[in-house]
Length: 307
Image 1: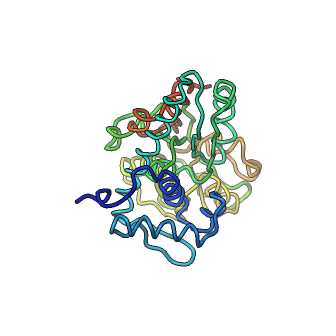
Image 2: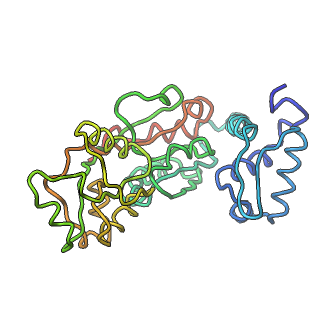
Image 3: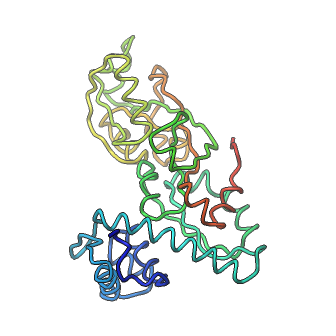
C-alpha cells in the first residue's frame, strides 16, 4: 500500500500546509514562526500525520529535520492536494475573474533586486488578492526548492535539454555574460600577466554546483587544465567575497559584480576564458501549471525576454 493509502483524512488541508512549510524550512522553529504555532504544536501535528500514515516522514533532532523517502513521496501528494483544494475553493466561489491565495517564490538576493521587481509589480497590479511569499538564498539551490514546496524559482537554466525537462517548465528571460574576476592590487595579478595564462597555477574560487560550475568544468576539460581549487562555495556573493580577500580568481555573472558592494575590490580579467552566458529565468513544475490557476496566472505574466 502506498504511503498515502492508510487513514489520512484527505481534507486535512491545514496539516498538509504545515507539512509543506516544514519540508521547505526543514526547521521546526522557523516553521512555528511562519505558521504562528508553538514548536510543540508543530511537532504534535507532524506526529499525527505519521501515525495516520504509519510511516516516518522526517528524521529530526532538536534543531533541524530531513525528509525520509516516505516524506518526499508524501510531499508530492500534499502539494497536489493543496493546489487542487485551492482550485476547488475558487471554482465554488464562482469568481472566476478573481484569483485569491498564495504564491511562493525563491530567488537569490541579486535576482530579487534586479529581476523580480518589474515582474512582481505588474503581477500585483493584475492580481492584488494573491499573497506573494518570497524566500531568498543561494542561486545554486534554486531548482532543488521546487521539490521542497516552492511554486516558482528564479534560477540559472541550461538552454539545451536536461534530465529534468520532462517534469519542469522553464522560461529564460535574460542571458548575462560570465566574467573572470581577480582581487585588485594583489600578487595574483602576476599570475594573470603571463601570456597565455597558466590556469593550472591560478587558485580558483568555484561555485560548488549549478549550471555555471558545469560550464567551468567543460572549459577545464576542453583545455586539459588540472585546476588549483582554493574553495568551492554555494553563492556568487560568497565567490566575490573570497576574491576580494585575495584568495583566488572567480567566475561570476556580470550583473552580480555590478550590484555588489565589493565591485571596487575586484577587477575583470580581460583574458579570462570564454564561458557560456549565465541564462536566468523562471522555473516551475509542469504539474503545478496543470493544477494551480495562481501559478498559471503568474507564468503568463512573465515576459519572454528581458534586457
